[in-house]
Length: 413
Image (cartoon, rainbow, N blue to C red; front, top):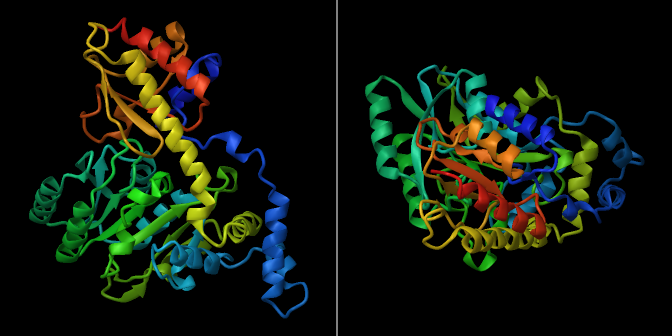
């Protein structure tokens, strides 16, 4: 977290610098959003489905149930989009996907012998939540096609020999943050099989799935899940509005606790939420509900235009990297990067350690900022890499930013 604080300080101290650091949604996509119209649409929907005068309006003014007030709309959207046929009672509406992760971890992990396995590199939010709860975290290498399953098998065995067990594995199969990895279909089937055989759960983070070309779409783990091993976690930050902080989890499994009792995971998460954030803002939920209703009830429809925008931005970033940094010149031949087909991020490998001092030099001398990859790793594997985000910038800024990066790269040994 110190690296993130330092990065924020660099950005504030050098406001003229072009920043490839934020993985935030692009603000231009929010300019025509009519929040009032979305709330009104949701209220009209609730009024049409209630016989109690004033009930719809009160729904937005009161605390509301911990599970949420748009569970039915989320469940219907997941069904329409072919993700999963979820019962609304198995859907928990949360204050962003981050809370969904925290609640799932707290509900699942009650035994100190339980271990969470994560990809290496990994989204810092899940690692931070696990550490906050005192959960042991073990990394497994992630390649372009997903987790290294041979290493995962070895890790499961090693954890077992130590008298512990894998309780859950966190995965972001669709263009993960920060790696951009897309888990292959065969890997998805294999990890589900491993979950069955070794009795662990999969926490599936679907934040960037909407950036996949629909014709090339790979089924989610939850879609393939026949044994209710997958807790499916989603967010409306990327496909709707980041400021409303609305996420959700589909937890349709019953799990066995440390005392041997079996309990519905969704109910346990709702109870935990009632003791922490109490509920997710009904007004913010109403905005999401109205947006879904205005998009034929479909998350895919709601995120389609935004997904196309981010794919175009990503393609342009990759094109500009090739234009400015490709070739065989002595200044760029030791620079390489991955080429994901979706998501927000590109990984760039340099011939020198990528640390905060290098970042500061980049900001001061070349007016360009990025994120060191090492903060996403639990090992030292990312010490020579940086992460570039394409989401927050417009095309002129990407062009100018990559040109600045190329000048910066040319000074590296």
